[in-house]
Image 1 (tube, rainbow, N blue to C red):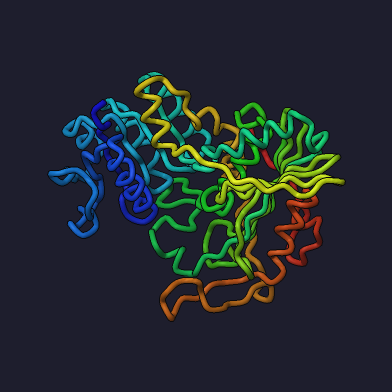
Image 2: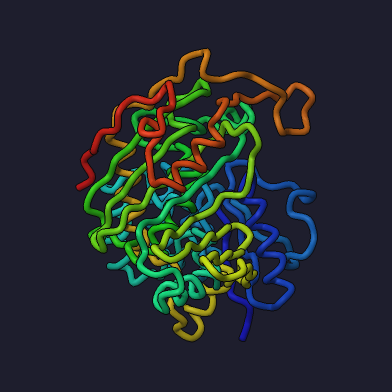
Length: 391
């Protein structure tokens, strides 16, 4: 078959990852980059080698670019609050979609977008790359075979670090809203959103109707609107408790993971590494590594032969309930000055600095281990938990 023509909206920042992936799939003959949508066109150096000849068309108008190039796929990697409008604009011109996570900053926008795409007959893949991991199939089989007995809960932990300039990289970064529009760029909704979505998929509770209760604790050490140190506890229709603890203020950043607790063992899944650890009394620990299906490849296969999409919008409905709960929750609590410190950043610039919350690594791990919120772990800066609206 001829390579599938596509356009990329948002080729800088995280969009550079998509550019490299497009180069990889171009070399395999699967896709052809027909256009790039950026407010400022990419330079020849930014475009680099390994793409189509002649160079892809460039425009700041995504809908017009889709029309002029005949693109079958539009990859949308733009600010969160632009997702729904750009998705519908591209779909209206006949393109199918790979849409970065989070899909939208509110459940109303998610519903508007999803219903619009359904009416247009548009295939849409949401960019939760961890949900392409073949480890998920292995984990679900281990659970169904009773390898760890009855599942008693699922925890997830993410202890990451971001320099202060992470929040100045774009006008919307670290905001809950911008110019009257929801953004909701917090730790649980964007950088460590995969931890939430992966835990929900493992439980088989990823649709909107699968969530029965939500408890939130949102905090910020950085000088931002949104949260950078937060936890959420969910109750699903399967009667599973899921707790996710996350921070961007770690002392020693590490790989995020999902922890499935059973009454006869447990499974740890490092979702960025596609690595699974099975631990059971009376058995040696078993570690396995797994391949991953790329979501763009999966979308191309869907368009060519009807392969099932791995992450269609309705399979992110439960995650969007969490986003909506965070959107409607009170503003994140600012941590007192004695609850964090400033130290050299992880970036290359000598002036880079970041804020660190002492003890947060231990709290994040304990949250996943005990399915507990920060306040229940007696973090001195944490207020008691509160259940929040989620319908």
